[in-house]
Amino acid sequence: MSRSPRILSIAWGRMEVEGLGVGKDFKVYPGGGRPWDWSETGTRHSPGIQPGDVEELLTQGATHVVLSRGMQLQLQVDPRTHTLLTERGITVHVAETTEAVEIYNDLAASGAAVAGLFHSTC
Image 1 (cartoon, one colour):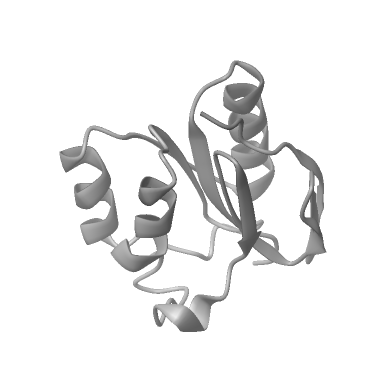
Image 2: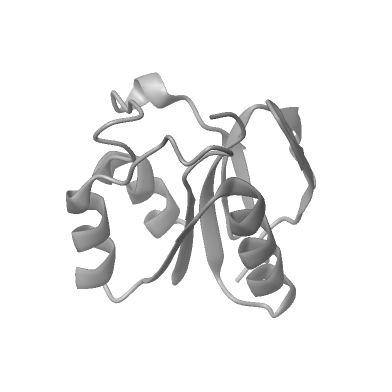
């Protein structure tokens, strides 16, 4: 299995991901990632991260998923998303964005099949 790319830096409104460059919000998973476009699934701060947002992470082989809630914890996680992940036996971590990046990078460095959704503003 391919390794998960490291997140090289995080600041308000700006992330840099190994092999993906600079952007605002990212989906990252074993073998790669891409910018996270909330409009694809209708994601809003509330009810938050949608089941459709995490499906791609699972199809890429993730066994651990890190969900960031934004720098000011404004982004929620839809309860259906958490249920979907736990029913599939996925280890879920939910945290403020800078903490989520630390959790993700630690798991990636350990060789875990980790994926994440990262929101770099509120």
